Image (cartoon, rainbow, N blue to C red; front, side, top):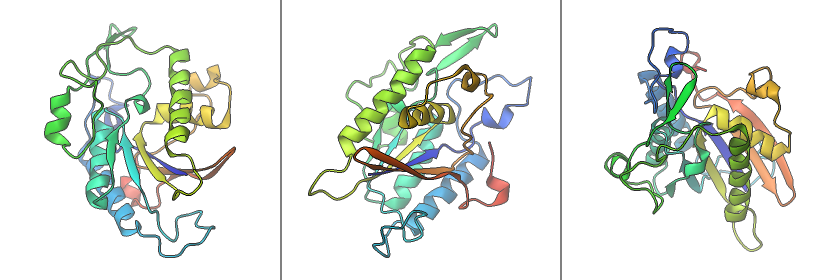
Length: 249
């Protein structure tokens, strides 16, 4: 099984990280740059969807991707990015995966230190804007995050480990079945946790303090190859499909 981890396009929060007067958005949407990044990524994957040569050393996808399924977090920036990809690819299943959301969930900052949980988008929002996406049965009009508290450190890492286990259970290589090639459209903070789970790294304070980090640019692609008890990381944070003026952090 191959996993392609794609970070969402630039969000309005990403674009205003240095703007001290900016009021942070709890579920930020894509900027115009973010939309262009998503469109470019979608077009690139479409143009390279068909595998032209069955070569086991297709480690840079020089012979194509052959994507079989797309998952997105239910945060708007990820869902919109993923929708661009699935609409370009055509007949590829597209589903929400709640647990690949960004660290903390949906929240508002109050007086700098208190993080108040918020509901998140309701089912009707996704049905109206992304009708091609399969939604979890539990998602209703009360929102997908349901105003839960901001996640603890332990909850974040356990969630990443759970996602990895479920991914391997659902889509890991099975005798007599074709290899699956999965896309996650997700987030930079979750990626750090996911990398720790994949590589069995202990979560350290250095990562929490941003002193050590796996950097992802917006709409970058990272590839993981899972083979039974082995994982190979073929590339990380690949942005070769984007022009220089669309590479953002």
